[in-house]
Image 1: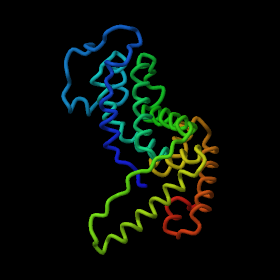
Image 2: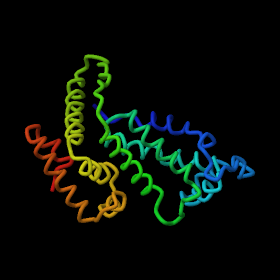
Image 3: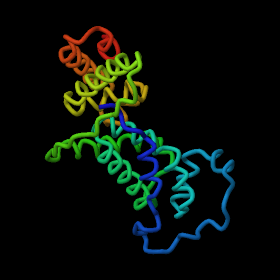
Image 4: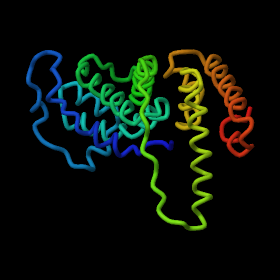
Length: 230
């Protein structure tokens, strides 16, 4: 099946109500910021500036950070898990962790995106290690009998085949592949997220390419070229 639409995750995580989460110090900080900023003001803020405000209990800043990063977090989770519902849960848990532990955030210690990727991938590993319950996804409806339909089905079949091959990779190889190829992160960035060395990431990617080459050997060079070039 294809990759799920990130707008679903955006709707789910955007509904996270920080006021419903327990405050770390038991104080009511909902009105810590006396006035609301304009949309332009929010857009001009860096992640670190938002995190400084979040640390004081600014719920608007928290929502802005969610808005800014939820789609990318969901895209990584759904590619690793291949399950939209589980991916939504993973990303929501990550943002709730940020809110409930906001006073412990050390600004400047790490990029927020790096932190988010790390938490999401760790949550995904937890999900992958839980007992599996098989479910059948809804099949896409065929809209018409146009001449392009066969080509569309062939592309979908190729996409499904590649997605399934990625799901068959060991979890750390899958995570390294997703971060490197779909998120276009450098090996150094992947190493930081996975808390390992660059050489270990290079080894994971090499083994992942070899595994994909083996899995897809009989299905044409076009699919192989996407992920298996050495």
